[in-house]
Image (tube, rainbow, N blue to C red; front, side, top):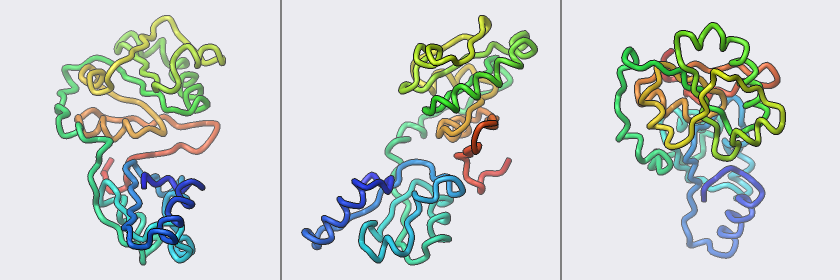
Length: 212
């Protein structure tokens, strides 16, 4: 079960426990767990007891396993395959001194995108003289949708599409918020700057175990 702890997840798991008790059910959390911001992604003891959440849980890293164990010690947590990031081992370690772009990775949420673009707009004049600013929107929140809803734009910005890893190849610095692309950037050796959200909580997808 690709587990996000939604109502459909709970019903699915309880159905298996009730009508197919011989079937082994595993909660697969194949995404970064923001332990301080999305507590519903970590099961509670009551959920395990009610059998609406599998006791067996697979996560994609030791830091995420420790986050669940600290909240629900009785859960059986294992390190599973990071299927969504299967190609991350193919990422090249880029020499950022030879790269010139400031790459802005927009998250899926429209409000977060608008806040980031407004912030980048304020500093564009001083930055764009030194580093070309490239904006990489999320596929679910394309540029035309953002601009139609009043998001900031600037003549010096270069909006880009395509594979994210290809865009990292030219980046000296990657800026984002609330996006797992921060982890992909670090894996490629590109420094990450998390942009604070003035309208809501700044979601940091980077585990605490990764040093600054």
